[in-house]
Length: 536
Image 1 (cartoon, rainbow, N blue to C red):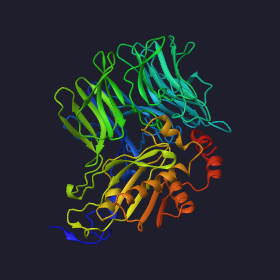
Image 2 (image 1 turned 45 degrees about the vertical axis):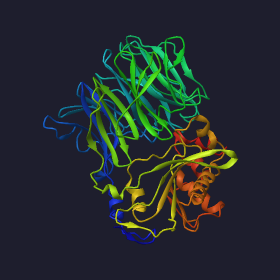
Image 3 (image 1 turned 90 degrees about the vertical axis):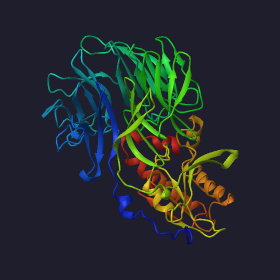
Image 4 (image 1 turned 180 degrees about the vertical axis):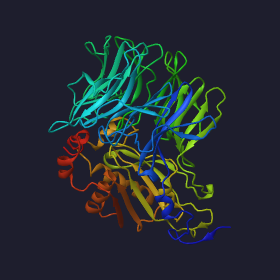
């Protein structure tokens, strides 16, 4: 029998120290000749990123030296800057910005130090013994220069430019026979989720490119995740329909594979997103988001038939297929982010790498409820509602819980429903939480994503206020005990809500944006024109 106590006063098994003691984070995974590799960031080692695998005894084994940090600062946010081919690791080192090759106990530098170069998004050209990469050049005065380069593996080489002229580049992808290269580019003031272009060019015997062909994209179309099938066909994700859907290019035109109101990619804030991979001759294994969560599907790209695959995760990333095995990064409301292996024939799965070993009784886990609520101008917005939950306590009948409204960062990003001690810290104490995917968030189509254009600090604030109002009207929150919190861009939303709306009793801004003029003036190249769209 539960003890009756007021909401907000319940003793909790989760201490603040538990929340602060975060586990590792998973940045990428690789499957090389059927073997799993991954890159994990370790807070106990000052945020160092390490490429890891399992040894023959099933124990974790680091594949880079103890003083090596497998990260990059390209675009500042970085992303995937590692590659594993035939057991050899290629990676950027955060400290000096150089690229290295690691095999066994031998580590070899591939690019010279001191030139102001940074590298990301690597592709190995085995035929020409080149490494293809995005290079960001900080050697000159003014704005950094981004290009695609080829790096000769037989000498210490800063790279030969193979294409230039755009402000940004990403996702160089070499065809299986090495004859063609696909890549993405875009210019200021666009962000990659606004408008990008996908190109293909032939590759000559030296690794230089022929005249490029535009495959898809414009300033009003966001293209992401180009990938070549084993048969040499080019696939990609585009939001030309209003949703980030999958497409195939036949050399002349593009074909939509499975048109639907769903998103087949995360927003491309970092390099190396992987939401699909090839399975057999005519199928893709893909992840896609609908308002009730992420799903894994098996797509016959010839017929467009999409079959949902049962699996344990509601948040998904970095899909890799090896034979009949799917490896991916996933999490759920009851399980933290992990590397998961799923047998595509039997449906059996197992957790291989977990980011946290924190144990919490399931009776203390508040299960999120996706909600769609009315907001301004006759529109609706989305959120996850977490009711108070504690296996030992309950409130008196008729009492309404205090509510904490959470506003995610980005702002062109989204929250998810994965297991979070930061949220459960409050729900186990008798607080309700609503985590808002306000207008401008990703996952709900291009039009929803563009609601924030010229309206940052208005639409997001309106949606956070209206989420709270909706829950009050539903009897799920106490109107006299409402608070709001958020970090970074969510901190800006929090401060704007407290300043311009007389609705919340309290708020907490965590490293929030507070000076838009200073942000526009001082931020790095990647985001230097971001406010052109958000504010105008």
